[in-house]
Amino acid sequence: MLSHLSALLPYFISVAETGSLTAASRAHAITQPALSRRIHQLETALGTALFRRHARGMSLTSAGEVLLRRARLMQIETQRAIDEIQLLKGEGKGRITISAGPYWCLTILPEVVAEVTRTYPGFTFDVHLAGAKPEVDAVASGRYDLYAGGFDVTYCRGLGLEVVQAATLSYIVFAPPSHPLADAIDIELAELAAHPWVQYHGDGAWPFIVETIQRQADRPVSVQVSSDSLATTLEQAARGACLMGLSQPLADLAARFGLRPLACQPLDFQFPTGFCYGASAKDLPPLALLIEKLEAAVAD
Image (spheres, rainbow, N blue to C red):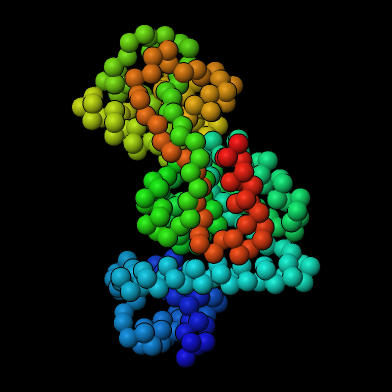
């Protein structure tokens, strides 16, 4: 029975991720009725509904959410087992996926990843520049092997992740030299809300900054431009005379785009950074070496 259920899981995952029998059946090159029968078989075997059927497609029930989380972990563990076997055979090939904030992508990760690839040249590292909480969830679900950036330590541990804390970073407000607040010596939070901002989508601290400003200023923060690209965001801040927030270690990067810290920093905001990974991550030697190198880098 177990092997039969395992064979049905890929179909279940596809439907869960697409929310559509039509899209999932295309992905598996089977008919929609055949896929529907497989989902029904899985639900019958488990004795519970995994999906809610509605006009817009299909959404997971509570039982379906549990199964999806565990099924994804089974997939990642299976892939890690294959990678380990290939290493034992001297055919070490595989992929390690990392999500990281800009501070980590631009300072610590490049050298660490280079060191690991020299030891395991057959492994590919897929590094995504991203934000905080959603990527932590993705590590817990197995979509990423490791996340490095700002996060809530308690939240990560609540997901069963291993956590290594690093530096606490200060959040700095930047602006072009011509900005009205650039050289002001006394800035109130209300003044930050009175000027447009640019938002980098990968800024994990952004929600906390907005909440702080809006609570004190009693007015919304105006976002003039938002982007998934850090370079685009910096360029827009420089050209559009907008405010932008970054962690202190990225001041040199901001300077390359003509931005500089405000003379007065009314925000007193710091956030912890570090990295987190699943409990079984160290079972894969290249990932274990990556974690070891990261631990050494943050200890220096």
